Image: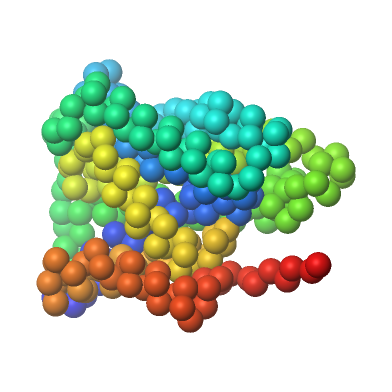
Length: 293
């Protein structure tokens, strides 16, 4: 029983970690809290539904296409909403308010078009087969979530640490002005970061939709709250922190639901976030910044 609960918690935590990876990538590199990120989660799930139900393509191809298209949507929204604010050197609160308004508009638009009813993926495109291994019951969707998380985390690590583009991304995150003076194209790097983060958010939406076979417009809004908790716990802008905190939150939520009560599950993340802010405001893996007069 405990082993199964731990497995379920790791799978749930992998989705939290994937979602938070893109969110913390935006903040760590671009320095903004982009509230439209939750919309990418919902958009990815609905795109996969359209690709499989409307076009009849395979689930694996739909997963890949949903991530790519959602990444493109993220680039467009960043260009429309945040690029003008960067040019005007607007304060951080401006980006928060603009993305909040955009998020409310996009969710309302999606609800008006698709309705608020829960939708299901076509059974013929994805059969969630279960199998037993070492006394644990594992489903295909759970295995896919874990494999995707490993691939995304490994790919991000390789990109940021082993490539020239990763060097440019890290330079922009460290000091945007100095990076531009060194000849780095900040606009191009911003678009790449937006594409990556949007794509990761869209993939997370597809995976959670597959795992629970439930897709609805406001699913991203619910995940956004968990994403905030994970990012606060792991440290704003810290990719490793988002991974560890996401897995930890998923395991603790599952154990709470299984052994204490499902009604307390959602309180775990926010309780941990508040506790982290009290004890270590920069997060588990965050770094305190020194401000000089």
